[in-house]
Length: 288
Length: 288
Image (cartoon, rainbow over the protein chains, first blue to last red):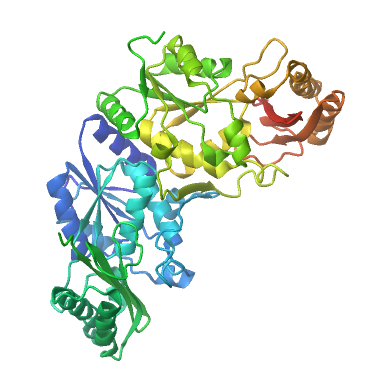
């Protein structure tokens, strides 16, 4: 059931009118940008947004520019009815779900690139279509004008790149990063989990176990990246259905790879289970 | 003399605080974005801004990214004292003149590209460093948050590309384009005029005469681009100190070259006088 106060907005012009009115009234908005398939990770972001802002906007837009192949784009899970239902319970003010032709009308050709960022993390930079992500989020920021953008720690690289874009372009929105939300087995909630069979789902819990092993090593005083990554590799190797795509230890602010942890660090992994690539990460907070 | 109400702002953070306060109070700001060397063309934009908005911001920033060579960048005319003096008479509220390290701090690497736009205008697209222009203006729009951005018709290509960027990225600022302001000889006021010797200055009046010839031809009913461009070429050829760099007739909205004028059209020229390249243009309004 949709509470009377929640509105589903399809048109960019309508959303911009709402944002302009909210800004004129001095209200602070929060944006939770999603590709739908709403899960507990999103709900945790929405809850934080509810506490910090006057107006909570959840965008649902499966952004074609973020997919490497048309197949991946087509197969991405979409269930707007179910999403609206869940969001209706979550005290959201607006669901902004523009059709593709509203976001990328015919002739669209303007893109935002964050260059040289994360490019020293081998094998990562090429694989994720960052430009599509930054361009889409920049448009969302212009349309919704949020004081805060809420982001999950799971998508560690995306979050770091977005913060960099916002710094470089003087965007007056603060990024709030929230911890990863996990199911009982430790698997991080993610839209892509829908592709997993029950057996794969169970195998995927190895991802969090590998991060826990890394964390334990760091607590024991191991600060050398190579050794910590070795811990991760060993745990992942113990699960026959899992293939490690990458494991990195990097400065969370600029994504430069670290050979030794000195203050804070981002431990990020991507693991393939069957045909599905899953991310997870651990933020080692400032050790001072 | 600087009137008490005009403030010179050097820091991005200070300018953003002023913009936030103005927005919260519901005031409409206007931005005139310049590289300094304030001339009557700028003053005409400021006058329009004064009439249309509550708060007039003039930015002065010689944007390194817009120059093809370091030499051109270094030689660009700069006289901030004189500019401040002129703007003090012009009823401006804020001069925003950030140092380079405020706009492009160490590690800056985010750029906005308007792709495929104007690329069919032969020889133009390569020559002007559009990416530097769009990136700098996007930053200015985030910092100043103007309701209106004022732009001179002289820089026809830049204006069309900026409008396209703002449409594609859903930027809630309206571009106001004002006619070219000319001296008695018909030469459009421009910072680069400072490089001309008196003899070159006099020769440069051929540029406007070539546009007048084009306009006269169109009034006579000549709508074929080739023929109109021929008129321009002939007039420019009559001045030995002038070399035509390009003459184009294009759709003002999408910069697609036109073979025949049907409704509105942009007649744009670039002419080299000595070492200095000068732009001018004519907008043929909708002929319905």
